[in-house]
Image 1 (cartoon, rainbow, N blue to C red):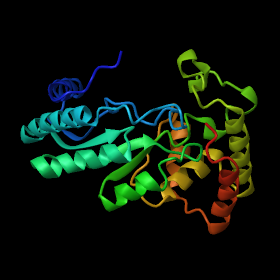
Image 2 (cartoon, helix red, strand yellow):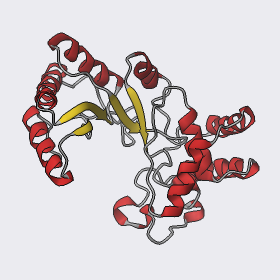
Image 3 (cartoon, rainbow, N blue to C red):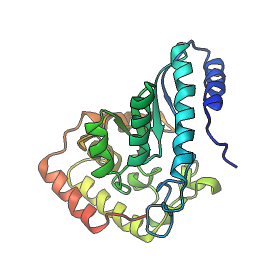
Image 4 (spheres, helix red, strand yellow):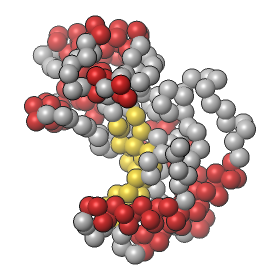
Length: 252
């Protein structure tokens, strides 16, 4: 069962993090995800989530309590900024509204899943981030490794995320994902790039993306991933990417 985030829970969690990290303060403290259900983790299709039966006032009160806890941490010098994760446009704007109304810390960033396979935040949520000065930080830009092409044809390399039962593709292992990834892998080959470089460079060049969160299990993977941010994809490459994207805009 996921614990509800409260102001007191934030203070306790920050103290515990400082102790584990053996540091005096945290530059950016991100809330892991909202208390309410949001259209993330494959809940972005109609029928998977209902907004009409949500108690808006109750959630707003929870958010105010969270902001007050964050304010205590900032005032005490324990954190400098805070951000959100797996939240929505309404969530961002409600935090901003409450911050303005009660003179509380303002949300600085949001980290949401974003990739060539999962670009539902473009353009609406990202537009909101740009105009509200909220940094947009994509997580899983390689779609849990799928966009490297290593899972094509049912392959499960030993030690990879999808080789573990808990991470076995989750909701990303679909026929549409297979076809989309195959398309992106072919585009990468045509332009002399690795599939990972193509996916990360594309993500980095999306207007409104502030910084991309990457992960790697080997030094070789890390070097490959980092090299993507030195690339500038040409109009030709972007056009080829979009030809695949238009065919498979929401593969999971």
